[in-house]
Amino acid sequence: MFDKLLGDLDAQHLTRHLTEVSTGVAPTVTIDGREILLLASNDYLGLAGHPDIVHAATEATRRYGVGSGASRLVSGTLSPHKDMERALARFKRTASALAFGSGYLANLGAIPALIGRGGLILADRLCHASLIDACRLSGADFRIYRHNDLDHLKALLSRRKAARRTMVVTDGVFSMDGDLAPLAELFGLTRQYDAELYVDDAHGTGVMGQTGRGTLEHFHLEETVPFHMGTLSKAVGCAGGYIAGTETLITFLLNTSRSFMYTTAPPPGIAAAVVAALDIMQREPERRQRLWANRERLCDGLNRLGFTIGASASPIIPIIIGRADRALTFAEQLFSKGVFAPAIRPPTVPESTSRIRVTVTSAHTAEQIDHAVTAFRLAGESIRLI
Image (cartoon, rainbow, N blue to C red):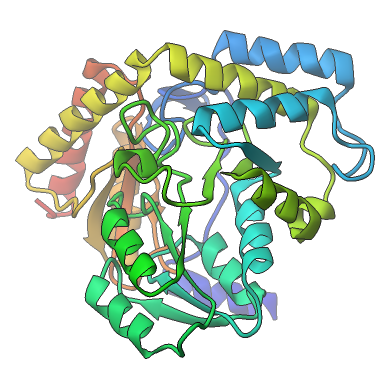
């Protein structure tokens, strides 16, 4: 049976394979014994290999061990976990925060706890898979609105029954297109129709906003949206996810979020690493400045070559190819020229929108960005895309 199913995937050019990265973090890694420029990492601020963060993780591991030994509500809440949550609350300027093993688990735990049967969820069509899965798991009625289409969302809100519990769910930064949700307008609609707004800020945390606190800071909505969700595995350079908000909210989730209650606590070394990473993020704003300078340099180069990068307003830059087979060929051409940026294909993105999803970091140099632009030119010419 599985041979046939895999054959069907292969015929559509949708089979996936794991690429072993043997050494290094962005901006270069070693693959098959070859050093290659990485343009597919979410380590936006170049923190994953920072020596202070590695030291914090190592020292906490020496003191507390590798594993936490139990769920947080049994005996798995170690001092580094509480230190991490206090640091997250300070960073997000909220009263409290709750950490999860991953951003996926944060969404799977929070959304079904916040809304259930009898409620209504309206989610953007391009929401991350974890949000879609969480919405379905909640048991609430679930509807999709067209991507960033405020008129469509308003029509759906206006048709609901009066006083029905309703939640609008969106990414802050969309992970495959790199564009932003119109959060100010979304908040206005949710207030008008007495609904709640849930923002997944996985790709905004550490990147967006004047001080890097995320997309809500970017849109000046931090004090009006009651709960903030984000991850620790992207700009923070570690692993995990979080919900930040009021003490009442966090206490409620601690008691109702199944993906928090029924899983072993994250490793204490990771928790200590997060504390160190948040400190570095705030005391070294030049990392974010370099990130945005690199992003502009790469976007300018790709635009000059005539590539279609859509409405990207973040360090996520999609080069739309179209067919899955062409995207695979394009990625192979890039790799042959020293750039690792894999093809993204359905079901991760809609049909006929296969792409190369480039992510730039603060660790890239100007010379590396220019090398990448040259590689894209040669790869684009080879498949007659430009």
